[in-house]
Amino acid sequence: MFSYLVRRLWQGVIVLLGVTMITFLLPSFFHSTIARQVLGPKAPLVLVKKFNHRYGFDQPVWVQYFRYMKNLLHGNLGTSFGADQFGDSVTSLIGAAVWRSMWLALISLLLALLIAIPLGIYQAVRHNKAFDHITTGIVFVLYSTPAFLLSILLLMGFVFHWPIFPASVPLADGTNQSFFGALWSMLSDPRGYGLPVIVLTLLSLGGISRFMRGSFLDTLVQDYIRTAKAKGASNRRVLFRHALRNSVIPIVTILGLSIPGLFGGALITETIFNFDGMGLLTVMATRAGDISVVMGTTLFIACLTVLGNLISDLALAALDPRVRLGGSAR
Amino acid sequence: MTQVAQTYTPDSKLRQFATSFGQGWRVFRKNKVAVFCLGLIIAIVAFCFLGPYFYHSNQNDIGALMGQSCNQPPSSQHPLGTDHTCFDMVGRLMVGGQASFTVGFLAAIIAIVFGCTYGVIAGYRGGRTDSIMMRLLDVLLSIPGLYLVLDLVALFGRNRTMMIAIIGLTGWYGVARLIRSESLTLREREYVQAVRVMGGGTRRIMTKHILPNSISTITTLATFSVGDGILSLAGLGYLGLGLVTPQTDWGTMLNTSFTAILLNYWWQIWPVVILFLAVVMSFNYLGSALRDALEVRLRER
Image 1 (cartoon, rainbow over the protein chains, first blue to last red):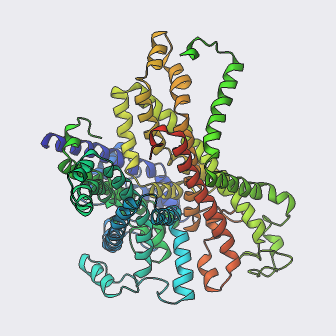
Image 2 (cartoon, chains in turn brown, orange):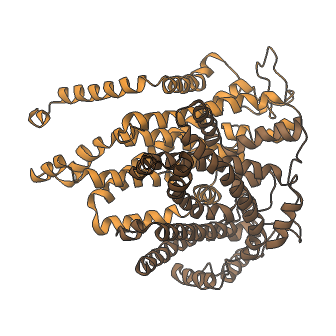
Image 3 (cartoon, helix red, strand yellow):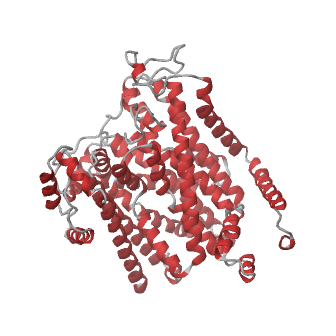
């Protein structure tokens, strides 16, 4: 287990280094345009030169990269070049958005798991019966509906036709951006945050229940299930004692893989409901051409993705010895 | 084994291709829903690309629309009303669909060509080449798709060619992975080893033996890729980062849906939503039907 851990950690570090090269190099081709964008197209050359010198854009690329990496290790992602938040530190912009995004995603993931796991199991048990066909159809529709269409339909139904929910969530202020503040604000105002939670729940529901159904179907045809049945174990005991345990293991993979989504925010859903989180931050920065913020959030989420993959691999290895003894790490 | 002795004239090759295509079609035809989906896609493509020849409307001259009343409900003059910039909605649906399909198809072609090349080289070469190429892929895979697309849009801007390149070049990772694992198993097959013994070069093995034999995987991936491309463009459009007026795509057409819902301009929402859902679901269903029909391994399930 230890050597597996070291090998996976090492791979993670290499991948992260690669990601920093992308998030550094891609915008570095455009560094010369930032000065004009900030100072205006008619700014005198002296000012432009001064600007470039101040941000180090006049230095060789590798010098800039080392400085970028040094700043990264100190948790400094640079400053924003956007018009309305010029000079703000990207790290603090992310810090203000990340907890709201995390709780939004965590609550909807929990709801989705609570619905999807029993649903998937029941579908598998009623395989090829009417219930399975109908719910599989519904899940297929949910699975292929993109976030913005689902949101439009829900907005039409539950905001304008039957006014149950407000059209946009409570705005971010000083009180609901901290770790506990965000959670408290969401739990104390379920109606205000209802729609984005419902959208995200429905969106992840499809994938998880499909996965669960498949995994349970695979388990049900295993030899040890037949053995358990042959020994005279009751149907209930076979399902919950023998099949459930083994078929839930793959769900661990889904949990690990959803970590980037948890903190990274749902880009489209957050934008639609005006939810101040990581997604909305990125979209607004893209619209404003604010490269350093876009690259900062991208790097942040890439780190989380690497971390999520690592955690899900390790959890899987801990639960299932075949994985770590299998030799190949992938 | 008789095929080894067979001489490879272009004619016999063509016949072979026709036979295998015919076999695939016969299996596919049994799935009535999938055939319906295929028909639906063809009908909508025809509506978008042939429609403008039969239904004439001004779709690019903003100046000529000045002074006309916008947001009109359906009338005899405009069967589906007009949108917020006074364009006729039926014509708008066609133009938007053209953009969506063009970007979807071309981006899928880029993704497939790039992904297959990358995957087959990594899988067939194996060893150190493979591990370096796969680490690089891990790096790219750890940046979520929509974020990378947004990065590139922020850097390179919003014209149609750029969109195709961006969506195509961020959509090939999955293709590369699957084709790699496919070539990893195919290169150990006897007929590939036979070619190697007979002196067939690496490039010949890759292009004449490994890729043609993964055609079923490639077809399935291509179907999903087109759907994904259409979805990506629509997502961008909905975020207000799609094509610029007078161009449009289905996502951009829904960009103003919030106001449209508020003012009850239903004709600006439902036609797009229905067409879009029909297309995306058809591609998804078609993809899974093809996977079931072509992949023998999954056929029992």
